[in-house]
Image 1 (cartoon, one colour):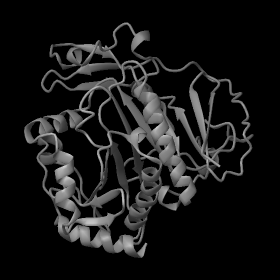
Image 2 (cartoon, one colour):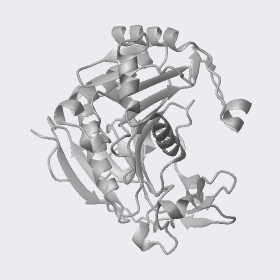
Image 3 (tube, one colour):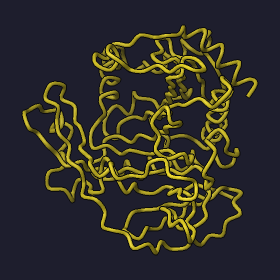
Image 4 (tube, one colour):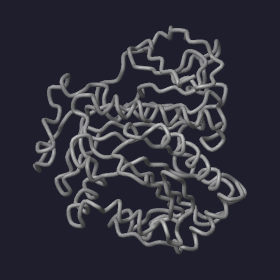
Amino acid sequence: MPIEIRPTVLADGRELIYFDDADTALPPSRKPDTRPLDPRPETATMRQDVLTGEWVSIAASRQNRAFLPPAEFDPLAPASETNPSEIPDLYDVAVFENRSPSFGPLLAPEAPDAPHDLADLASIGLGRTRTSVGRCEVVCFSPETHGSFASLSESRARTVVEAWAQRTEALSALPGIQEVFPFENRGEAIGVTLHHPHGQIYAYPYVTPRTANLLRSIETYGPTLFADVLEHERTGPRVVLAGEHFTAFVPFAARWPIEIHLLPHRHVPDFAALSGDERDELAVMYRRILRGLDVLYDDPTPYISAWHQAPVNAGRDVVRLNLQITSPRRAADKLKFLAGSEAAMGAWIGDLVPETQAERIREAIDRA
């Protein structure tokens, strides 16, 4: 059976999409959301930092989001009589619009002060504002309150990859969207507000600063940057896991104590462009990497998992889908905090030798 996609809406009009595993035991029908919800918050406003040209979304409604609730009030668990959660029925994987978004719910045609285009966003001026159009979604990896992506079954991990691909394609088609970013924050040391295994997807109305810097590097180096990085790393000492379609490695200039990059072997701009075989292998490799990180120490390692994709309207022939996993954990009982040099100046100092860390991570993946 294929992975089934079942869209519906929540009581306040937000989109909810169920993704049923290929081997699901769930029926095709789902209960409706009958909660008496308040209207959705107004769309936030972006302000431009005139010193850098960067845009900051002022999203005050995020102050009201849930913060580490007890398990019986998990807002991402299937709803029950005592817990009227965000997801009204049983599920395998579920994706829904965030009720406290940084971007959206308005999209470009609906907002009077939406960004006109990339040139409009690149202009610099005092007191410039734009409506924070876009979309923020929550991706629930499992109905279970506890666990992680690493603890998912192979079938469930594959369903999550399919959800990332489907949502990337759908969000990229929305008006005014310039970049789609799936990510996961795992662990209280990273700052998570919910323990339930989940990730998020941001659909930005601009090209993010990191991606803009990447495009400048490609312009300086040449269009084969990703292919050359991959060729350089595949036979080197920093590889931690290799497959038919992907290679994972610790980067040459790793910033974080734990940092892993994963690249596809062919040019693929985003999740939606992956073949079925590539999606199958990606689900297996990604889960293996995370399981390896969890056995590096006696307790699970906190991390940020960032799926970088080509912008919607720029650089699609030169920017390759790439995963960046980072963790501030530099020892069993020590974390790297971004202080003066990194936080204020963007000038990084690495605490550990990348080749040494690659060997440790490679051994951990082998025994996980």
